[in-house]
Structures are given as structure tokens and as C-alpha cells.
Image (tube, rainbow, N blue to C red):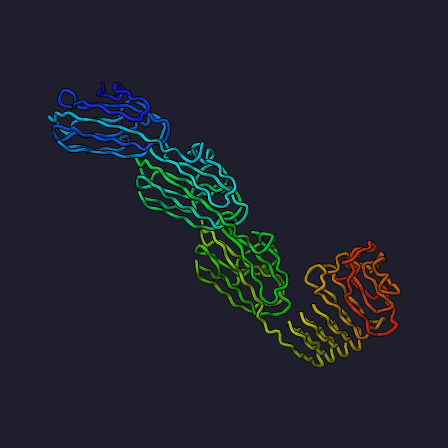
Length: 558
């Protein structure tokens, strides 16, 4: 027989199907029934057979198990009139005990009633219930392809957490559907400090779904650390099934090494020539990317930021004027930003001294976005013809095949990136061909021929032709940064040099700089006498016949 308190409620036990006829009235105003569930179930309550209006029906969950009905513990309610029926359909979880209360709607209602209860199992799709904390979250592991989970949230299980990781930057889709009571919330979190708590700024995205409706999140996420999905009641007494579908499609960057988040770890483009494009990602796991580049001459630079998948992403050009590896006041030269579907652009003229940096960053916390960065040196590569005068001139070529002529005076001629012709004329001149295959003629005077690339030696330095080298007065200057295998240090007498009779003997020499008497060629023997291919490089050829070089003809600069 049903009791009038939770403690005396008629115990149905595990609910499958239950029918009971009774009455409520002035002498017995309320009947309580108690039941439990072995799993998530779809519940149906039917109240009928009422002989006087009105009779109320409610389902309760005693969340603190104190035997009292308190605020928030009534889950559902309805009422039936004389000759009418009332129904409750709901989804309930498997923890604890539930109660059904049948009562007078108002004093002096004395009525028979018929109560029908049934439960149909609605088991989840995974064996272990997703935990209600980050540390007990259901571990999906590496999210690949599409995975679907069918579960329940409600008063007995207010939130479910799922944990996943990514092996590369990926486009993520979350679809929440199958909701049986409005509303159910979904959110994606990133535990940035890995403390197992959701703190300010760690919720990346959120949405909600109503009964019969769907909700979706699409986002781009990076590959560092763990992410969490939380599915929860939107408000107290929401008890609902749901279907969670998660998918990940890899969106890898275009460069193998991730651009660093400091100037010292910036991705080094080297000398910026032509147009270069980089596809990458910034977000909570990688808030800023830096790129480093240099220029061989004053150049017109274009920056285009596009392909942004979440607004907004910022771009800026910096010049580290004191070379301390920090961005300080006044070192940001230009900035722009791009929105989802929009572009940001910078056009500027930059000088040839030092290193520049491009920084791509989140505009605000929780922006997680792919981007495409296009950097171009748009300086005209037309061939230049530059001529000095009787003074000490400095002539600098561009990216074309230039002709530089110093005439009189102690001139400095710098070729640039093309195949250039440099003629010093009279005076003590410095000739630096730069990259490419250049023709160098010092003329009268004590001339210096400089060989220096952009960092360590590469074949882009080319093979320069010195038309006539005067052994008693001219010098060949080698950059230690470029020819870094040379064992001498800057300021020492140059000794890491040898002369051989033919090119075929260069590889066997112990010296790093080797002159072949037979061909007149200078070689960089990178690994000494270790025989093998790919370590001996010709970088200059002397035009005057039968010349003999010695170590005194060379000097090292930094």
C-alpha cells in the first residue's frame, strides 16, 4: 500500500511495468510510490480513472537521499480531470531512487485513480559512463574519422565529459542530436594548464540543442595537449538522451617545422625573394607564429593574410632594432588583421639591414584558426646599370643581372642576387658579387673580393669569375659565417689553405679552401680529406693564367 511520506512509499523495486488502483482524499491526501532503474530508461506514467477533478501526479528524485522533497527535486508533474487522462514521458538515469506522488489538487477532492508506470531500457552506446569531471572523462584517444556516442544527462548524471587528442592541426565537427527534453548544452574545452579544472578562458566553443533539434560546432584545433567535450543539462530537471557525433579531418601545415612563438625560434625564411606561401594554425595551443626574413637590398614587400577560419587573426611586421630577441616599443612597423572569409594586407618598403619578423597571432583568447600567409618581394628585378664618379661610391644592385662600374675613387660594389658584372676602376675597391655567377674586375689599386652568403654556405652563392687577380696587392675575403668549416678564426693568419695541381685532387686535401692550379678554380672543401660527393664546391675562378695563390692572399671576416 502506498504511504504518505517518502519513507513509507510503496516500493515497486526495479521498474519494468506497474499498475495500481487507489484513491486520494481528505483522509489520505497523497500516495507515494518508490522505484529504481538498472540503466537509462524511457519512462511512461499514465494517470486515469479520476472520479473528481483534479488529481495531481509528479515524479521526484531525492538527490540528497534525506527522505524529504526539497527545492529542485520535483522532475515532472501533470494532473488529470474527471474522465480524463494525464501522461508523463521522460528519460531517467540509473542512479538512486525515484518517487511518484499522487495527490489532491485541492482540498475536498476525493477521487479514485489508476496509475500505470512502465520503463523501456535505453542503454548508452559505450560500456563505461562518461565521468562528470575532466579526470574521469571518457577517453576517446586520438580523434580520427567520425565517432558517435549515445548517452544521457539528467538529475542523476548532470554532465558527461569526453577527452580526445589530435596528431595534427585538424578541422573538428561536433553534432549534438537525439535530445528528448530541451535543452542540452555542448561545449569544447582546452585545459591549458593541465590542472583538471575548467577555468576562465578554457571554454573554446559552446552550443545547445532542443527536443527534436540539432546543434553543431565546427572549429580548427591544434595538435598539442588534450581537449574535452562536455554535455550537460541546460537547467535543473532536464533529463534527456542525446547523440554526440565527433569527427576530425587533418589539416596539416605546409611546412614541416612549426613556426616558433619567440623571435629566437622563428621559422627562418632566409632572404625573401619572389613569393612564398605558408599555411599554418594559431589558437589556444599555439597562440603566435613568428617568421624571420632578411633582404639583400631595399625592397618593396607585400604581406597577404587569408584563409582564416575563425575571426580574427592578426599579422604584424617587426624589426628587432637592437637584436636582443625581444619585441620592444617602436619595433612593430606595420600591422593588419583578417576575418573569417576576409583578407588582411600590408605593403611596405623595407631596407636591407638586419632581420625582419612577421608575427601571426590570435586577436583574442579562444580564436583557433587556420591561416595562409603569403610574403612577396615585389621589387622590380629589371637589370640595372649603375656608374659612379671620381668620389668614393657605394653602388648596390638588385635582383636582376646588373652592371656596376665604380670608375675612380675607393668604391664599394654590391651585386645582389643576379648574375652581375662589377668593375672597380682605379682606386682600392671592394667587390661583393652576392648570389649568382658574377664577373668581378678590380682594376688598378688594392682591391678586395668578398665572398659572403646568407648564413652558411649554399650553392646559391654561385661561381664568381675574377678576371685578373693581383697576387701582391689584392685580397680574397671569406665570411666565417658562410665558410664555417674553416678552422681559422677571424683575426688569425689564414692557414687552412692548400694548392693542388688538378680538380680531381681537391677532395683528398686536408684544407678547407683549395686552389686548383690546373683550372684556376677555388673550392670550398667542406669536410677536409673525407672522400665523398656533395662536400666540395667551386665558388670562384681566376682568369689570369699561371697564377699561384698562397694563404697570404686570404683573410677572414665575421
